[in-house]
Image 1 (cartoon, rainbow, N blue to C red):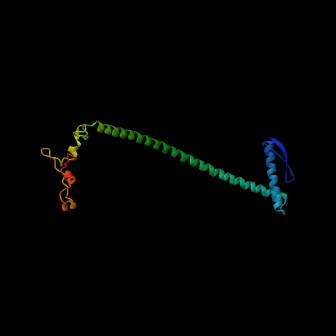
Image 2 (cartoon, rainbow, N blue to C red; image 1 turned 90 degrees about the horizontal axis):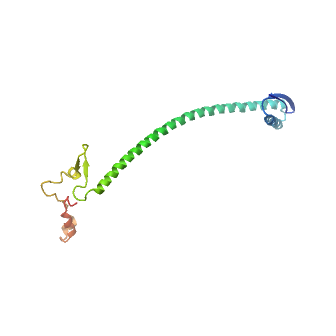
Image 3 (tube, rainbow, N blue to C red; image 1 turned 135 degrees about the vertical axis):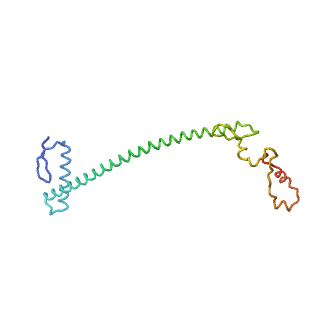
Length: 187
């Protein structure tokens, strides 16, 4: 611990401190200037009264600073807890994203196999089949159009309503006649 003789507001004081000489000089200069400013601003104020006001002002600033520090420490603890909660949520979301990626890959593979199967399917005969849970395959036509097809007879023809314009004009429209002959098998 070092001993210093300092002068504040023309008053010599001996102090013992562990602070460095540079820090002591900075503190003395700051306090001395503050007291001189108070005396200059209020000429009826003595140097002793100005020193007391300066001490009160510094104490008030210190208390405010301590209060602010405690608030910041509480905020830090709360934010640390929030950060931990967010990290846990982030880890949970990463796992969910990985699961979705895995499911996406599975669905992508299923679609790719389906597209490849359709590309390699013969163009005549049954082009689409439905696979059952037991692994058996059945024609999609049998499932989708069972009521439309008569297995023992010719397919039903598509019936079109006569156009009101066609009914009033002579029967020279060959395009309409061609479409009237289409059947479900043709489509």
